[in-house]
Amino acid sequence: MSDALPAFADTVVIGGGTAGAAVAGELGAKSDQSVLLLEAGADYGALDGARWPADLLDARAIPTSHDWGFNSGGQYVGRVIKFDRARVIGGCSAHNGCAAIWGSRLDYDNWAASGNPGWSTDELLPFFRAGSERLRVRIPPRDEVTPYQLAWLEAAPHAGIPIVADLNNFDENLGMAPSPANIANGVRLNAAFAYLDPVRNRSNLTIAGGVLTDRLVIRGGRVEAVKVIRNGGEANIQVGDVVIAAGTYGSPAILIRSGVGNPTDVRALGIEPRLDLPGVGMNLHDHPVVYLAFTGTRALESAMTQFGRRHWLPDEQTIAKARSSRCDGGFDLHIYPVGGPAAGDPATWNWLLPIACMTPRSRGSLKLRTADPSAAPVLDHNYLGDPDGEDARRLIDGVQLARELASEPRLAALLGDEKEPGNGVGSRRQIAEFVRANVMHYYHPVGTCAMGPAATAAVVDARGRVHGLDNCYVADASVMSVIPRANTNIPVLVVGLRIASWLLEAGMP
Image 1 (cartoon, rainbow, N blue to C red):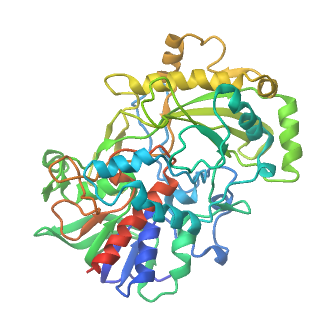
Image 2: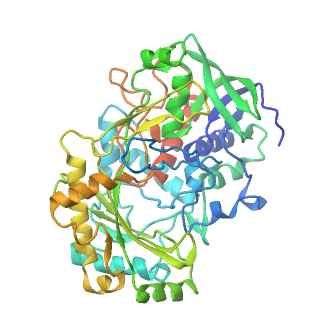
Image 3: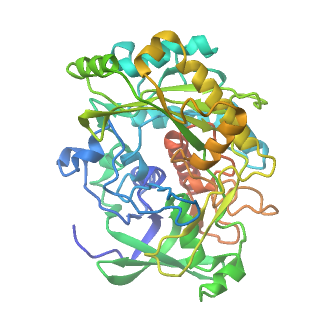
């Protein structure tokens, strides 16, 4: 690949992650306009080129070899939370757990009802179906489910959680099943394979890896150029349209460095304000999670070892949609077993049960310390920070429900003792202390460039266009004003497909 970048592109897509790969792939395939995709991480080419690192293909566990290195810094006493984000073509679809979950009808209908026409469940359903088909999503049959996962699945009805056929039924809000996943023969099928591989040879599409986007050059309510850094050298690329798809952390950072955001914060970085949009970087949220951990037994290890001689052993494979006592519609909890050889070492094992609050009320923020594009942003997720304490109450209920599930006799005989939080943590007050001391993330940050009407604190309109900029769009998880009740793998893909469809409809530049 040449280090030379085009001097101009009709559309520049910044970020080759889940949404960015879909946007660039769709525009490249369905338009003759020139499309330039900029990815800060490596581009390993097509899947059949045999250049991809093994850990990014192996869907058994989440790799960390291509990470941005974001973390919580000194916010939490005695611990640092890593906020893993993939720096590679395909983005987080190249290093996630492959859970291809859609969410609830309530999620997307609420987006539409909040002033975002075109985002209702029925309007998005064709994109969910098309995206899942392209990623080759399938539900593993029962004979592929590991003994650990199967034990949880069989115990679920004893805790009032029925077994269901498909977790992606938008109208079924309670149940447990094997998770639909974008995995084929043990290979993690990321969005770059699905959307870029088929069009890599098109002359109108250029994919450039190792390109860090600094900022947008803005004049008169339009983006004139994108300033980038590659191999230590700077370049300006003239543009017709720009689609920012750098993720919940990257997209607002690019806008702020471009002078778009809260003017006071922008000036403090030594940057001239270009557009007053105080919502940029605000509304950061994620599904807060706590983990139960078990010792396991020799019987469980033996069953898994025997199974592993005939099948692969994924860490994650089933999910339960459940309800806390605070749930006022749909569902508000995910309970999902994680278990298998620790770091791939058959001599050591992990037996975990995470519980996630899927309807968080807490909101945090992203800010910049410096205008340097290589510097990490300051990330404050404000987990459990909602004034009424509802997020914590849901997780406390979730821990109690998970323990009820784990107490089913046949499952309990396999799990052994509860290591975390342990038998000494029994009352709601004790569980609350455990939850607050151990809460972390479900890898699903959203919201920092929220969509909505201009009269609100929204950053983009319902079609992803940045308020006040004629030719600049955001298309990734950052536009989600409220997080869906789902792993964001497929919903982020749908955001990219939905906005790409509107760009194609408008004819692009």
